[in-house]
Length: 336
Image (tube, rainbow, N blue to C red; front, side):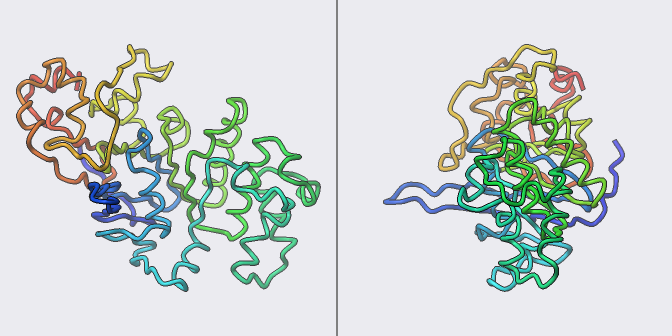
């Protein structure tokens, strides 16, 4: 496949590592273990993986909430500085939308105060009321004045999530990081919030990194997908290619549980990701259904002993897997 050229990244991680030291002699946790990731202007990227794979830690590092052990984060071509003043300016341009709107909103604050909080923290000198009203309106709460004096407990789950989104929009960011933005919502409301994020991208040119365990969500909203396992990106590329022709066995397993996949569910055996115990070789090999079936016998030795390089941030579809890169006989098993 001919590799396309990506526009300059708005947000990028380069060879990023985040390691948490163990307590009382316990091994260190390599939560993010060499990651290259990029989000372009006006692009939605879905970061997908099981719980414990490191995706939330990666998101926090991208937001400047966790300082990397090694590597760097850059925004608009400039490395992120970790001084308080620099981070203050950065967080006007990059905003976080959390999973649980009930936990994100102070129950004692009205909707108006919840949305205005960011303006007050950053010393906004314009018309606060107008800015709050515009943010609520963009988030789909109209007429906005009807919501000014309401409290979180008076709202539905979908309305609370819209208030959280409005609180992010009020500072007119260029990018949002949304951590499981619809996980706590009813199925009937999920589609509305996803449609809202797409509309904000189209109308405002807003970029987004959406952190999720759900590849079905990625299918509905993302331009590109990055699949994470045990601190590394193991497959990434355009959403159509990754979700219609996945190459990495882990991606295939995640997709198989979707009702629309049309394939038998793959039950991953073995232990779930543990960042304190990174296996030798391919870090997925202890749970790999392909290796267990014998289909990857030609490359089994490499799977168990040879580590794979960090997958580069690139617009083309890539997979970090010895089997995918192995003999033609193994590739035929994949159907590629």
